[in-house]
Length: 377
Image: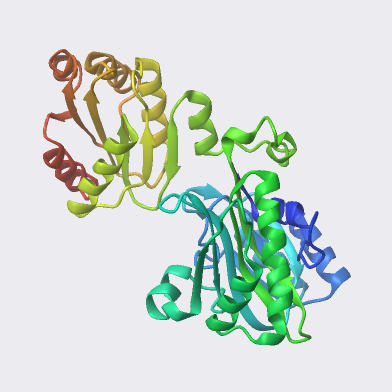
């Protein structure tokens, strides 16, 4: 489960005093009142479960009441990568001397939590790692030893962090790791961790993800949002399949994580960009396929859909029945391309050919090229 910025900050505030909390509201007038109370300039941030808010225009400075109300109205209702902005986080603007990046996340290649730190914060860490790799620390954390403080101090100094800030940054990192363990987090990212002109270190922004399988231990975290906003990811989970929202416009549905990843690669190789990862799993029945297709088609950015099913436990005729039912209930708003092979695929292909006018094949690359072509028309 992902947290919005303000929710993650609420969790961090249990351990840290230097968290920029602010006001959460959906009322532009409340933004103005709060700005008058704490003093302008203020920062107004869209609260959505996706990155890239700043580049999309979802993070703005307001220097007076008129700007505050206009910016608030502009951001509320904005669509950021398929996520509608319904809440704002408002906080006092900070005089920034320096911005650092810090994250603790699970690294599957090392099978351990890994610390990433850089003195170049506030930008994409991938860009920093590519252009200035010497400024990025990547340090696996041995769960039996926790963070090795002496090694961390040496790494921080080697990255270019000034010695007078090392002790405090080490304390922040160590406490952050203990929070990750205590709360079953798979990601805690602070970007930026800010050094102010007054030499204070402040947690200015954060991303946080808790392990879905830890809900029985972390029920308080799963109940943080009183509005119980249901994202596409949460809706997919409730319907029995895995979904990850992406930035492209070619919707993807497949059975099995490996096949879905291969499908995404095929779409990229054909010149397209996947709009999502969606795995209906093994043995998916018609109802699951129907729900998955509706979820993907509901993304307004999607221009075509590629359904790729290899029948094993999953029966091709069951998948075909679900697809046929959906398109016959209501004509799809975008072209759909289907690649179907494996168990009962011949029966499935017959259903699709006889009951729909969808594009059907049993060759994956051919289907990917067709989906990209149709999506561009």
